Image 1 (cartoon, rainbow over the protein chains, first blue to last red):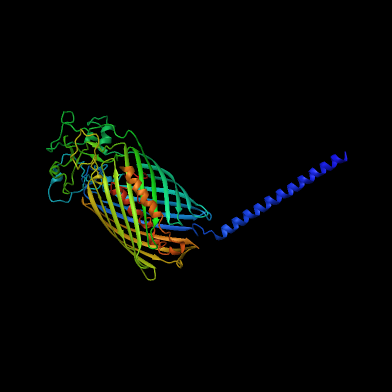
Image 2 (spheres, rainbow over the protein chains, first blue to last red):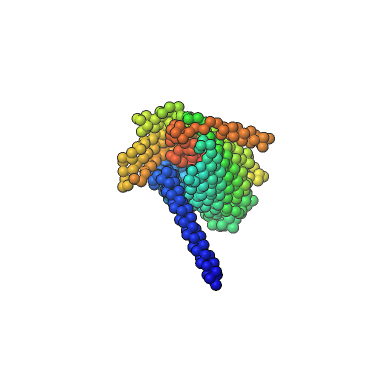
Length: 501
Length: 71
């Protein structure tokens, strides 16, 4: 009996000792963990030291004579203002949340002619300011012109978008995970985007490899050229609806008999049958420090798009179909010139493009630090896709610092060229037997030159304050763009970067 | 042919990554803001209009498609 009691006491004693040891081990390891964490947090540099707020804005304008909404001819005047906020918030030593929100408010002469017969356009009151009496030669008060801007609902629009991205860096800062989600909308288009990426640094952070995947799920709320929309709405009867009070002219300028055989009708009465447009991309990047003064990177994107890839607003005219007009007959012979302010050709169809497109852009950057005042930034990209379009892009920028690095000038030049897409033809040169067609000059053969100058002011002490935010940098940039098809544009951008004190 | 070219590229990149590493304290020039291997944030709007006005896009840190009615 006593032996059993001794054994039990020994077991209890043993259990007690084991418990003490376990508690000690746990406490020790926990305290070590705390010490480890403390020591890490003591010496680990934050990925982003403080909240940063960027306010960016640009004003863009362009002029050209190849409006795609009117089939490859017409006024391409466009202006666009884009205020944008980008806020980067350090959530912890390793995690950063970035929110990018902005709008793009534009007015476009090309888009305005979705309905060229709007009363504010060529159909508006008053003479057309030329010296002839063509205003009396028309047979209908309704008229339009690809060269005259209307101001219907499609003349202005606001694009709005918001994107949030989150990044997490490992303790040694050699691995970075990121994820993003975004939403954008304009009056005929909405987009949902999301993606993720991973970046790995090797070789004492001299080498970097990144991979990123991105998906956009977009949806058209299609708007069509008014004559096509109205024709379908009127059950393809020119005596009904929009056309009931409008005279239609043939190529000779004579009014057609709407009940006869010589009448206008579009090639297709089926417009968009798939409102989705999805884009899937995988991007690879590799960068390498070559020396104390030089580094380069290579980017490769693989992009697959599917769905309705054409723009339902854009008209197409066929060479092998008769032409019909609304407006002043005397303007028909000068239809493709700017002197035409009073007649509009009825569309044969909207542009039609394949429901799939695979793109491969490959780009490289090489930057060289010449001295504390001058560096060289270079970029080259080769692009090809299965629509027959290939292009080369090259740019050079030379940042020049002065005033002890407080001020920097950025003279820059960019060259771009592209071949014509398989589906492009100019105004009235397509054949109706083709399966796909567009007269959008953005898909034509051209080259372009862009000249620019930037200016940057940097104040590392952020002396100028707004509330608790100090101004760190101010950027101003101007670029002039000249395309060989006659399109010219310019853009001025400004950016303020503030940091939270 | 494509596989061969890619293999050569990978080989060259591997060789480059085996160059003598520049130490952290030697990266003063490399870490200059103007030496970043990405487009400057103020160029965001230029890239945006180029995506609209040109048939090519991507490989520049900007959008590769989607998000707008452009290409």
